[in-house]
Image 1: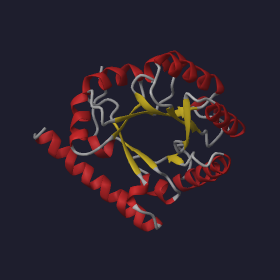
Image 2: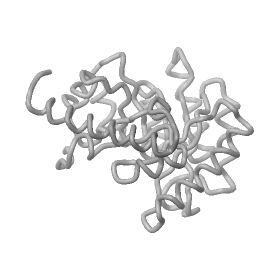
Image 3: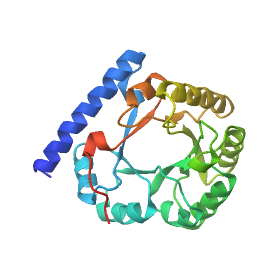
Image 4: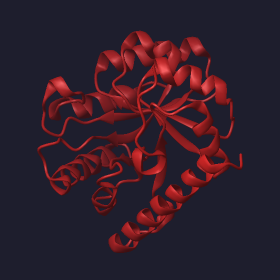
Length: 234
């Protein structure tokens, strides 16, 4: 695509990539240690296609009812779809058909649902899964509370249908990002001790990606800084 919208997204992408590179330099890390996941919720499939043409390979969605038709419409085999929102168990059968990774696994019941759905879908490779951590232990806002994180990780690791990738969290609104991401880094280290391959930390968004990278984030989830503010679809 070669149009004004593609040029706009390209400029935004260059700025975001430079922010990531600068944050990595400040943290003494290499830029290729951090994967940019473009969060495309509320944006049309055409923007996903534009991102792909600009070299973005990882895109994220938080609602299956929007993600499933969008993934079908784009149909790009070189895109990796990340499901990053709270996932209802009755949506697992749909999500496992297009997602490479689910970032928001926060309960044993959801693990069971994903295992069953992945088996029925006859995937050619395991579904990546991250334990979503509730950093403030508020059960009502999504995420596994402190005492459950290891149990959810164990359940994921025990299933051949899933692959434990690491942990994910959103900084609570009333916390300083540095405090939130430092706590997540400590939890990630504990998980990695038991499961060395679980080395992803999904943390940081448009407003706090630099702080997340400083504390070890490997996957930043960026939407508005890439695609701008938009009226939600339908």
